[in-house]
Length: 481
Image 1: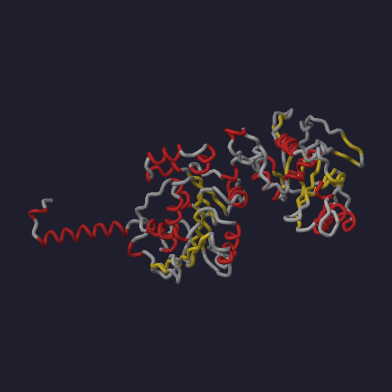
Image 2: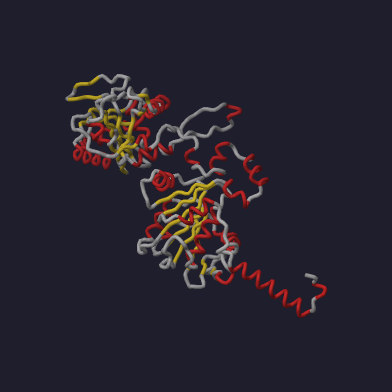
């Protein structure tokens, strides 16, 4: 079109038509959204709890905002959102709200864009949508009590939240049968998400949860190739696995990489009354004291049967008596970390309290049994899959599924990061976190636990005798074939 030949009126009309076309295009912005494959799968999921786990730049925030707009505009194709009127949107810092609003304009039609409300604060705290539904913003810097005391219909978490915030928020969803929770996160922190949400979803243990995995490369249509290359080159190998591929940072540097829930976790079943059980306590004055029960089968498999924890040693002793009375365990050995020989402020030792007040006799572990490197080696050997005569591979150590603390510690117990390895070399030593149940298991395995029947010790041996056990009590106990 030659604009020079148009009259002023014709030019104004052409401008008006262009503006209408542009406005129409903006009004259709939601319908015309092009989602990358993980974003599309996230949107289509009907799970009540959805996790978009992705690397940096994988499109997590866009996936959340796309969901938010469709929920509040009542234009969701895959779930009933008619009763979703109040949503909470959590983020690391409320200063990011302005960034979210800029991104929201790329998803939400202008005529449907919500009004903002600062609620008397420096930051935007609330969105009021045209249909009077409401989104309220919270940050993880706020105390978890900020999430208490209100009922809501859905929650959005951008990046990993502290567990206390998640629990307080989940409580507020109880009144709406259509409630849901969505996460968009690069898993660089909060390992509780891995054990409580990610694993049950990935292992198909909980149909209400679904994990959508995404990488930075899934969103390359919206990223420059130079940025991707430069970002990748700036990261270490472990950082790439987290920040490009969305793997959990908590799993980097795991001590027990051999541990796998599908292999090592078995269903809880009653333990035979004449099969031996070994018990170990790890007492603490500044955190929970813990106890672990380890059973030994006739074929020398080691089964973590039970775990317990308590604030004080007296309380733990009472819990031990309760469990052993209920389970009718045949206990052949009781040991306790040698800190149980130390006197507390009252002048008593944990060993004395257990004996005098609970009727339980424990011996302190020896220095040899406390050897960390040897203890870790024994656990790893017990977790390692071994060849059986019939061609199968199975470990020696199992954990019953009621021992959630043990399972979590096996998954998250990690090595310290070496400082200045180029100067001092790499020395592997475990972090003193996620070890509440690992230490008692180390001590127990350092005992070389053996099978006993009626007080007689059956030779421990190093071989496997599982070739023809399809009808054995062990199979009935665990459901394994």
